[in-house]
Image (cartoon, rainbow, N blue to C red; front, top):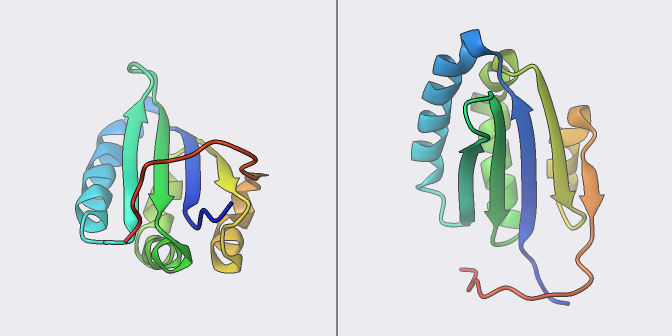
Length: 123
């Protein structure tokens, strides 16, 4: 398969007393990320009102993924991890060494695509 897209799926748990600040940070990140042409999917979902969030990210290619993750690491990671109790991840095995290095602390599960398709038209 010649799919160059990179996927990141994070699950985070945010304690109740930090949820307002987490939502503010989410809005800031969504606004900033909307300017990244290499970001195909950037969606944040909360499971009911439980404080458990799923963040879905998909990048057109290595360049798009590295650009976003570098901006996150340099400008947002400190605040993000101060607001969450836990963070786990599932990441496509074709993630770049840079992305894998940034995510090393959460020890994500790396997965490889063996079938299927997508209808995205990466830039």
